[in-house]
Image (cartoon, rainbow, N blue to C red; front, side):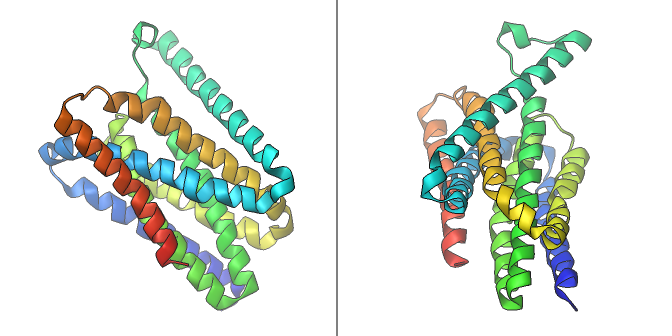
Length: 257
């Protein structure tokens, strides 16, 4: 099998495996899910922030080099503003077609669910490009890179699924969308194989935009909702689970390098 075959095989298997592993969460009963979702949202916050600050942004800085650090900051800032405007447009459309409480201080959680899908799709596209680059360099490097991607995608997909459920998506819709978004890594792999030189030039900027998406969802949607639970026990659990989410990203990074 040539490099293209291995790229398609590993990106397809990795995307499906990570999404289906996260989808196992849907087998739980409604009562169990109701109790678990707040904890998974806290965990998801840590995963998103950990992935943004410990994986995506360092990758963007490394890709552009020390002479272009300013460009990464501007890209992240632009990404945050774009996602803010996108959510505003979703809120505006929602409030002009249905009754809503956005103007009374409510928050459209469905918008954040869509944003995390956009960010995850971009992240998976980048993962596909990375896998393609590795296989084009060396088969063993390709296998190692694929294992690393799968290792950090599984906990992240669990977090994404928790966000989708928290945003009001049905279980079937959340599972289907999460699976489809996970398979965008195949498109990234194909793009990386056929247009690798062009993809490399824009890869750091794609990483920065993906980081901006994760930061925005964590800070604008998840954390405000977590502040509604103010008792000491809930706060302690939230801190522990946020730290656990960050720790999972760090551990998968160490064990796969």
